[in-house]
Image 1: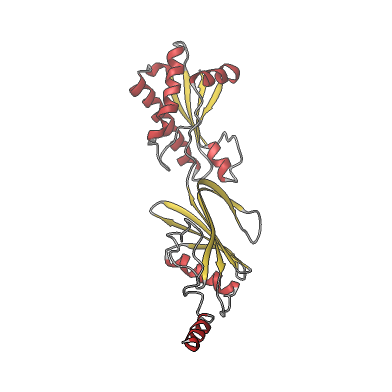
Image 2: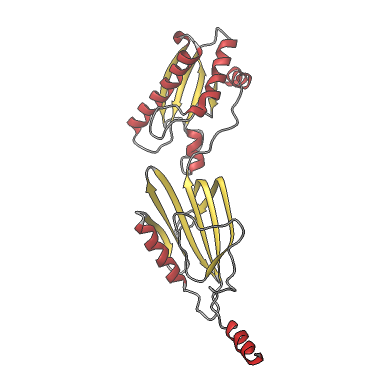
Length: 277
């Protein structure tokens, strides 16, 4: 009996890491649906998900590319016992193939260390970066989207800016991408414009649409005009503002308030402004 026990205990020393001694993933962490499998002999050591965050994706030359949206970070740790950790090249090539298989594009890479790519599916743009370290693999994913605007200037604030400068940018009015359809969450901001106009019956406004520099000049001018007109019509239709007090105008990309080199700058340039007539 004693001899059998010794043999059994000795056998335990040689069980693979995937056996009963395999380390579990960190609490509440799981693989991302985009990459439902992982490199063998790795566990999730850490993870983080932000509903809206930003990550600057690596570049072999030039500046990094910041992308905003839902941000997911997963850190994998090698747990193999008696097995060789995969090389950086093996990890990079595995993920390159995975990105391509779901219709993605490889953007840039350092074949021994990291790769990043972009996947566009059903109108959703997703950026991914995989980085190989000593015993680690770091996965960063950004599902690109615009921030949901919760803080909207009230009617008094809008009026103060118009009084001081003759115009005011109204953030919180959002549209479907490339369209002039106003999203439902814009109702609060449009309601504050209506309050401003109701409180000052003599006030007349230009409703001016602005875009970033993505797309053609002519199409951006038309888009900005259509969006400004959509806001005007919402004020007339939903709040009873007289049409004679409003006029819509589209500036396209010709009056930026920030550089269009970053997503943050472009988001600031996509706006509706009120200008006193």
